[in-house]
Image (tube, rainbow, N blue to C red; front, top):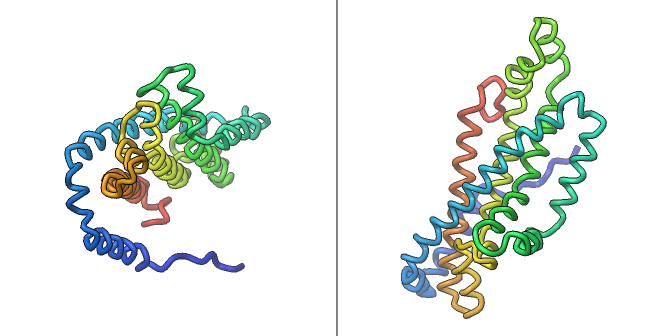
Length: 240
């Protein structure tokens, strides 16, 4: 089997270093610093949107994935998953625009659009992770006299936790990168600097929104990665 090519480990730091040199040489640091107060204020709005929509997607997506993985849903699970897949093919901007016709402008439609965009990876990974738990483990638990709920909490979820965390990481990465679109319907966030900078052809303003968005995405991914590393038991964690 041919291995999948991967990027060299030094490529990302090298690219970040080159970008830093370009920003410095172009004198953009001072121009970005002019928007510091806006960056702080809009970053707070950005993080509130990410936390609210991403957290809601986690709270709803994991139980839905568990429900679809139950034997009683075996015949209907794939149909429900296809509905989620179809919903994901609709661009997030279109979902936000459609929700705006019902919910108006501001936080509510932005929250709904980001929630929908974040939901599928969590549901899919929870469902797939639970189905991938070896059947002999469940059979052994049944032989020990465990109930269905005990098997779920003590056997299935611990073994599927790594896959579930991967879905959460993907969902939050999508969420952080998509949140700038919330500005287009009055939802706030760093998209205000990004899109206004594009309209005005102001590179400093554009980067004042784009760089914090990228840093926030890296920070969120780092936090979820640390959770994936430290919260999952050693015996079922391939990272340990």
